[in-house]
Amino acid sequence: MKSQKIFCGACDREVRVMVTDAPSHQGQAELTDEEVICLEIGDKCTGNVCPLGATGPDAMVARLVRNGLPIDDLKTAKAHCPSCDADAEMVLYGSGRATCSVCGSQGRWVIDHAEPLV
Image (cartoon, rainbow, N blue to C red; front, top):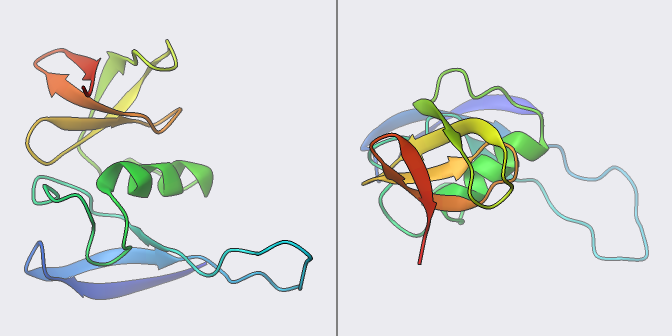
């Protein structure tokens, strides 16, 4: 993985991202390409698609978790995840949105707990 700074149109500033390595071998099945992982998910992430990673903020958090990247610099809160039934760090972003750092499911942040999105 390599670290870079890229201009984000949603935040209107440069943000830190990680770019995963492309697969080094050919396989029979379709292999994924490089992925962009934003390390600065936050209040400005209110849209459905991140302009950098071409995915929603919840999927961006799932990429962070899947690649073992730390979430220390993100705004988080400890809460019970209604999807995986674990007490976990919820990554907070946008207008009251949260994503579980364990299972990657998206929810709505309500003062002190997370609720599933309807």
